Image (cartoon, rainbow, N blue to C red; front, side):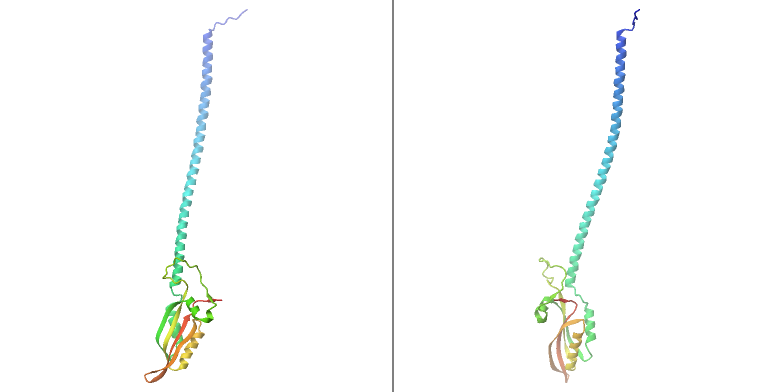
Length: 220
């Protein structure tokens, strides 16, 4: 007994075509969902990478600014050091009041000064003038620059003190010299001249003494 199929062929073809359409649309929907999800993932990754790049750029800018600030500070420190070195060269190491106070303490009652000279003098020049210091050098810190202003001395200086006056007796002038030699405040004490002189019918001794303020140190 044969089975008779009354369904037309065009109907079967239409159903098969619909099934294919459903499969294609389903596959396209799945692919679209996958692409949409992958796009979200990629966008999130790109956002994180962009944020990291911005953080790196911000950190780089901060580092660059800190480097520039450090360079400015180093420049200011170097400038301050140069100014400090300049002040050390042109400024007296010992205050004038301290020198005058020590001299007033050492000068006795029988000595009257008619002239007091305080003048800075290059130490190297003093070394050349004194034979006992010909082999000595002076402790000097820092380096000298060739382009330094000619007004600034090339070597350190010390204060030369010249005392001119009269003493009641020659022994009083000798006592002043001895006291200057014994104190730690002065060195290189030398008598320039000493001669008798008459002042108001009284015999006195006129003298001139030279010494230097001992605020430096020789290094053999």
